[in-house]
Picture 1: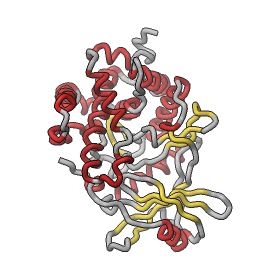
Picture 2: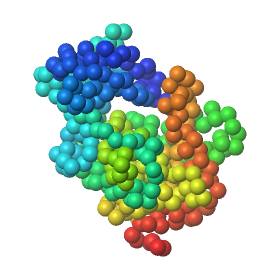
Picture 3: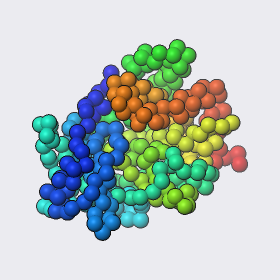
Length: 349
């Protein structure tokens, strides 16, 4: 059963002129707004007369204020620890606030924020390569090092996109219409409950980005091997550290003769900067598979209920199914060896 109200609550309904009015009122600036896609919030790219660009976020009414503050504080912490990391910076309102409570026209309460807008090309549109995947692994490790030591009262909130909570989606498996695919997901879920759940409490944990996917990382259009931006901190959570690279690597599994090779290249680069411990390597495959399971379950459930936003919701669905089907054809030992082939210890290269 879905427990996250932001996945079942309609995002704020605002047009570009509404966003422009909010910026004038709360930030004292005239800007032009362009609506952007989003799963839970309403987002606009704002452009000032001097060409400067910003991101205006109007939070989902179901999003608790302490969760929004968690995201704000995480960004501020990263900026303080590693100012060179390409993450958005929080823009204060006229009164100095980083978060402004507002009332929507439909009577629902929301929270207004503005961030710097970082330009770039989403990974999904870029030329994929080994140097790019290695750059991504190094950048993600830097991000986790920058987040190390960050604490917040809301960091341990419930989030369905957390690979440490994949078992909570068990009840959604029966909704998969295709019988072979349903059986495949059931098999992965059983393995997860058997191998991962008993070990979770022994894994090192910290606050992580938790959504380093093909849309949340931007690269330079002319130098696709350089990370230009890490965006969307909406899934920030305190969770097992290995879940960070497992989640990110799951999105690197491209179609081809060896889909795990791309994931392995990113994992190896991450491990070179932030070494994975033996107990983390032991569950890496299970957590990567868990992210793929979570993706197919949540996206299909939501797309059926919000067909008007189906294209956005289902953007990673096909990749997730392809990844599960490929891993399902391998033994556990084969798949694990492939994933860890570029890690320093135990490497066969």
